Structures are given as structure tokens and as C-alpha cells.
Length: 135
Image 1: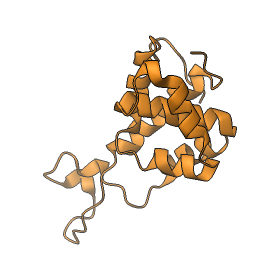
Image 2 (image 1 turned 90 degrees about the vertical axis):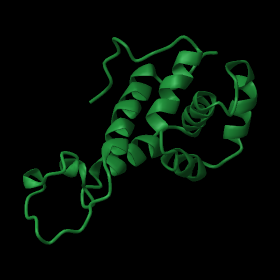
Image 3 (image 1 turned 90 degrees about the horizontal axis):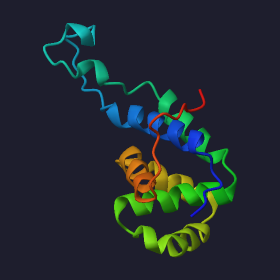
């Protein structure tokens, strides 16, 4: 299996997707002005207004050529276990059936996208270890 999407791009996507997954919805509490003053150590992760990471992930995916976006989706499916690594051609064929907007939406709807992509890479003996993602 030879990917056309670069490993650096995939690693950047994984890093950003991890940041996106780390955010949790903010809980409205008028008694607190500063989330760092909270008794909840995870309060600093609450960030309803900061959509920059999601926008960056969306833009990164939308900027990919359709064939590369389909590869990312197929890789996520392999990582999720929908397909086995030996079924790569089938996964890629199915991913190519969707238009780019649908592929991007499917990827953004995956709650553990970073983990799925990591596992998908591992299924093909690839990893982001030592890779320097584009910044």
C-alpha cells in the first residue's frame, strides 16, 4: 500500500485532531471568572469559543485533493476496525465513492479520529515517531 497523502500531513492532522479531542464543552458557571481558579483541574480544557483547532482540522482536510482525503478516510476506517489492512483496496474504493465534503464531515464526526489514524498507520507499519509534521 502506497499512500499519496504525505506522512507529514497525516502526522500534522493527528496532532491537531488530538488537540480537538482534548477540548471539552464549557460548563456555564457565573460564579467563576477564571477557569484556572476552579477546583476542577480539567476546567482549563473547557473551550466553547475557541473553534480555531476545529477550523484548522477542517481546512487541512478540505485542502487535500479528493484522492488524498479518501485515503485519510480509508486509513481511519482501517484504524477503527471497519476494514482490515488486507482490505485496503475495498476501503479506498468505498471512500472514493463519497464527495470531498462528505469525506471531511465523516472524518470530523469521528470522536477518536487521531487514534483511528494512528492505528491505521500502525496497521501498515507506519507511524509518526520521528516525523516532523508541517506547522
